[in-house]
Structure formats: structure tokens, C-alpha cells
Length: 164
Image 1 (tube, rainbow, N blue to C red):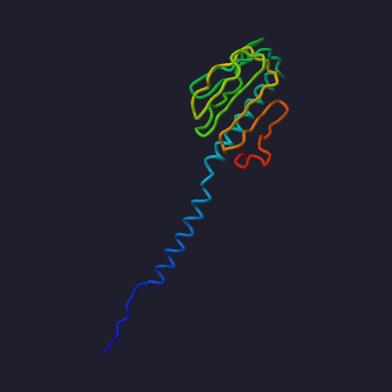
Image 2 (image 1 turned 135 degrees about the vertical axis):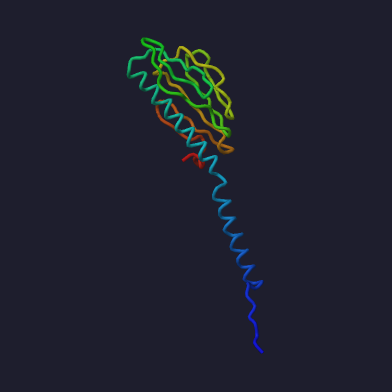
């Protein structure tokens, strides 16, 4: 009489495979948790950099008066005097953050955008050499990231962990 060998996996083998899949799934889940916050923070830094470059370029080119005109997707930085010229569009804040732009001496300052909503109002009569501040927050619970003509910094003593 011939004995047939059973083909298939044992219960122990199946449990080991399920355990390995569970461990791998846990690793993947914890590695992607902060990706949206990091992406929003990176976007905020790019928007801040764009504003800084636009204001510096306007100042270098002899612009004496700037306006930020609100559009559906952001706010366009425009030179008003002595010649009309557009520089860049500062996007609205990401869904997890808040942007606040303050330009001392300008009309309608500060202007803000929160959670993907349009900017609150356009700024007019702004000097391109003004000591503006652009604050982004909402990427973690405690810190904000601020840019000014002198540079950018994090408000948290331990650093902005979610802002690369």
C-alpha cells in the first residue's frame, strides 16, 4: 500500500506568514503617518521662498509700490509703481496649515489663508523693501515657521520636526 503525502502548509507555517505580514504592515503604516504634514510644510517653505524672491526682485528692479492681488489659487505679487509687472503667485495655505503675511505700512495688512481657503484680502501700497513677516503654522501642535527679509526660523526651541 502506497502512502500519499499531503500537500499544503502546516498551521505553524501559516501563523508565521501572517505574523510577518502584520509586522511589515505596521512598519509601513508608521512610516507614512507624517508624510502629509511634511509635504504641507515643504510647500509652505517653497511659498515663503517665492515671496521672498519676488519682493527682492521687485526691490532690485526699482519697484516702489507692491500689491498682492487675490486670485482663486493664491495671491499674485505685482509691482504697481513705477511700472506694472507681475512676479509670482503665492499659493493658498495647505489644508493642514495657516499662512499669515504682514507688511508694515501696507493697506489691508495682514492677510491670511487657512486650511486651503482663499487669501483674506489683497495687500496694497506695500514697499518691496519693507520688513515683512510670513508665518506658516499648523503642521504640528506647537511650532510655526517664520520668514522675513533677514531669514527664516522655527518658533519651537526643539526645532520644527515636520519642516525639513
